[in-house]
Image (cartoon, rainbow, N blue to C red; front, side, top):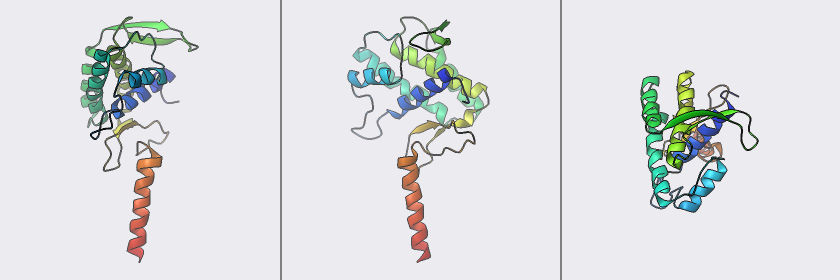
Amino acid sequence: MLFSHDTEHSLACAVELVNSAPRGANDEGLPDLNALREFVVRHDVSEVGRLSGADLQAVQDLREAIRPVFSAPDDRTAAAVVNTLVSQAGVTPRLTDHDGYDWHIHYFTPGASLADHLAIDCGMALAHVVASGEHERLRRCEAPDCEQVLVDLSRNRSKRYCDARTCGNRLHVAAYRERQRAAQ
């Protein structure tokens, strides 16, 4: 494990959040409160109260604040994005051991909105990546027609595609077909 369980968990949350942004007319990944609730459950986001339309809009807006860290050209630029992200949410670091998890740090203020909670959790996870000199692990999918982001947690930093079964496979098949055509 490259980073702590909490950090990797928050990184996965950040990636899914950014990748939920619409890429076309009808592909919003968080279209309504039910989808937002499912996202919260899927990522074990704790201490979330009743969600409203304002929460949905704030979380949708948050995606665009997180996205630039994945295409930042250097550590300084990535740090500036992360600093902006975490400065917008109230922070009250505290140790907690809930829901069967060992002691870990919660950064969000109790009672914080979901968007503030996600901003600080995702922001601190991204901060750990940048501070550890691993910024290059935060990247966009290398498929030319894909806007998805990813965190490369592979040992040799070899992950290139957001999903090997879609983008990776599609490009490998296209390259194979091109080689077949060239050979004929």
